[in-house]
Length: 87
Image (cartoon, rainbow, N blue to C red; front, side, top):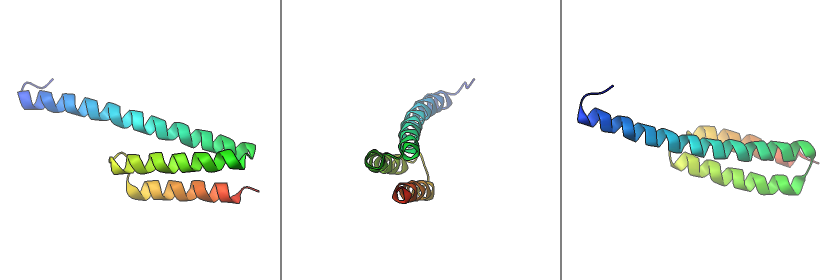
């Protein structure tokens, strides 16, 4: 455990940021799972709506520094390709 006041504060700040990042990642993962389920079931309309929501959430996470921009770009591209590939 830290003895210095500034080190104690940093620990608290890091815990707060870690919790925030976990919540954001969890939200993104949930939307991606719903999108994958819609793609698997063949529901194109729902998949399109979920793709829009997933893209939005991932962009927000990227702007907050939770994900790297290239990671978000890659994942969005793959999801869009999967939705467009649906018959």
